[in-house]
Image 1 (cartoon, rainbow, N blue to C red):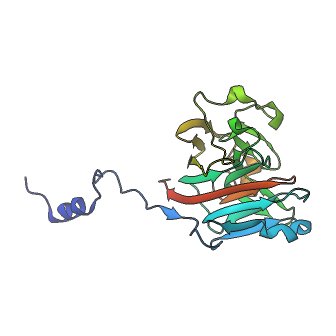
Image 2: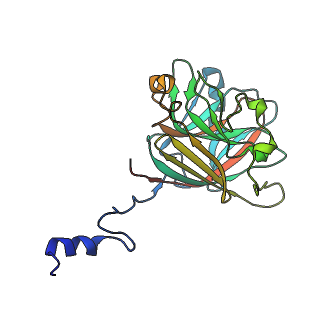
Image 3: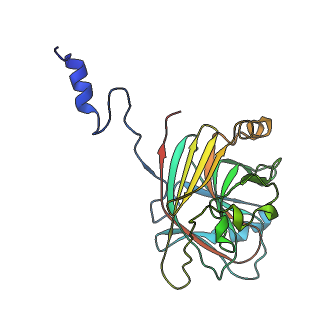
Length: 246
C-alpha cells in the first residue's frame, strides 16, 4: 500500500521513538539563567522588605541567605510564569549546620492583601532531611501535610520516609541533591535523589472550594521559600520545567 505524501511528511517530522498517535514531548524550559533573577520576583511582608535581598544569585545558584539573629516572616521567590501540568527538575544544596526550613511551592499564588502564599509545597528540611520531598499544603484553610496524610507538621516523623532515602549535606563537600516533581491533574509525585517519596492524589482537595477560591492547587506559580525564623542558607540551581499534556 502506498504511503500518502502528507502522512510520510508527518512521520518524517516526528522525533525518534514518537508515533503519529503520540505527539512529541514539549521542550524543557529553563526557569533560571544562572546569572540573574530575571523571570522571578520576591514577595514578603512590609516589615521584611529590608530582607528582600536575602534572595540573590551566588555561584550560579538561586541562594537564600540570612544570618543569625535576623527575625523574619516568610520571604518568597516566585516565577513570573504560571504552570499547571509539568515535570520540574532542579538541584538543591543545604547544610546540616544551618537549620532554616525551605521548600518548593507548586501551583501557588501570593495574596498581597494578606501577605500569604496559598498552594502545595514540597518540603526541604535540613534539620530533618528524612522530610525532604514530603508535601505540605500552605493554603490558609488547610496548613497540614498532604503526604504523608498526618495533619499537623509535628505529626510527620522518620518512619514516614521511604526505604532507601538519602539527602546530601554540603558542610564538608560541594554536594547537591536531585529533586524531581511531577504535577499532572490532581496527582503530585516527588523524587529525591532518584528515590520515590510522595505519590499524592489530591482529588477532592486540590480542586476543592478553598483551592478554587485562591486559584491554586491545579495551576499557579513555582515559588521557593524562606521559612519564618532566623538563619538560613539554601541554594537552588539547574531549574528546568517540561510542560505535560493536560
